[in-house]
Length: 272
Image 1: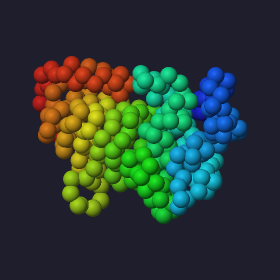
Image 2: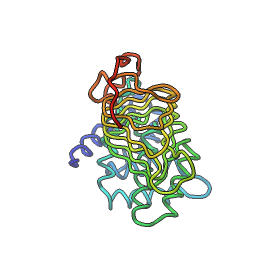
Image 3: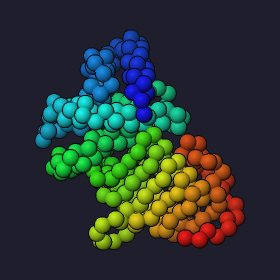
Image 4: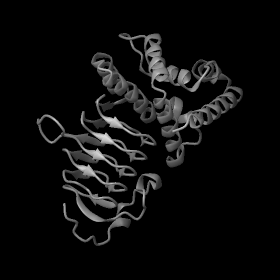
């Protein structure tokens, strides 16, 4: 993930902020603070996250310093953020600019805060990582354990009530709607949460439970309860989820086709 994607995204965000400050004068102080007076993408993203997450217990300045330090030491987080922004504008028809998700969308923002929390977790700094998790949960209604591993090019649409357990993993170029749970199915210890491969699309309020594997390019219907593995390029739906067909797209996450009935074609039984 070359830095050129970060530079490209940052240039476009600044351009859109400059246009916004000219056409909507009431927004000028806001855009100056978060974007136009900032020296880099990381500096600006630190300000955006801190402005949304600070409270009486932890100041905006403290959070901003924490984010900026981690971005400088883990530049891959900024690469991921740029790719996540691109995913939003590519897949969300309601989004018309990079600036919108950057400063407004809690799905994008909660993911970037998680990447910082995960970096802290890997460093053995449990308290600040859990603190960030707690703040994001309270502010955004998104609860991602800092140990969970999440890739790039993620669209977390709307995001409210998204829950991810400690041992869950999410691959690259995945699209997830609101109300989704990647949880355990009991109080067992160890590896107990779902593993999501690249290109998967998960519909709103789907519940994926246990140490299950969702194969590359699979599709999970809205409201489905999934407790078994899903092979690559298979669509599942229902409670409990059953196979209803093969995906009509190679990478459903990129197409965002939520009409799961289009995949309702006979499927030969696949051995587990």
